[in-house]
Length: 251
Image 1 (cartoon, rainbow, N blue to C red):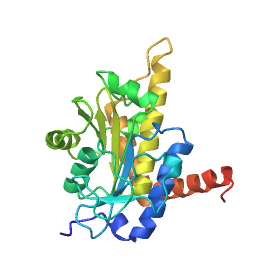
Image 2 (image 1 turned 90 degrees about the vertical axis):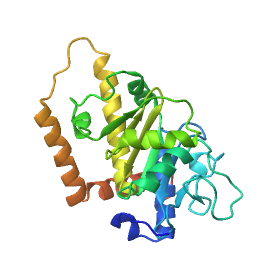
Image 3 (image 1 turned 60 degrees about the horizontal axis):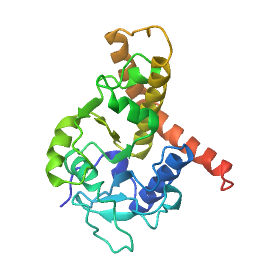
Image 4 (image 1 turned 90 degrees about the horizontal axis):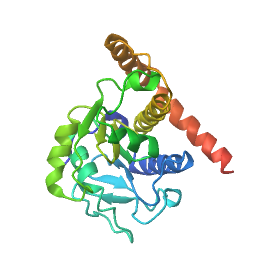
């Protein structure tokens, strides 16, 4: 069964997506956003129904390569031979988004310290900082039900996400999703920065300066326009991959 795929994913071969996804894993490690061997990033495979590529469970992100990424269906089961298995806690979240959000090509899940701190707060993300404003209208919230292992939670997570691109898993972490890998990386970076700044600002004495809702919405609209029209996400992703490789002596 072939499903609609975002053009930005459809235009790439599986081999190209494997290289780009491995670079995404390495960037998350390089930036210090990993959680030992846990968490996951996935990318939809064009022409493969709802199949997606994801990290082999048990490997650190630094150990992920284009070749050892595994291909799974929405049930998390492998559809190609591999000596590795997928993280059982990943299939429900990633599978349901790839199955039902035709505009999404890539999904990333993290729970860094600032992000996890924000998920503990009833108010969630504020939109008064430069980065927080860019998330206006893009964040959904899902009530914590425990480790995401169970099929019956899939529909509730999908409903909580709706048509948005950031899902706050309360008391846990976040999932971000976008049309392709560079856009998902840039959105993850924006969420991470928003969380860091919110934690730092709220630790200082004195009230924060609020932004009018109209300004928040304008920031979100302008950010999307620049990402889509001026290729901000592609330029950012490629530049960070080059820097990472230079710093690691690989480029």
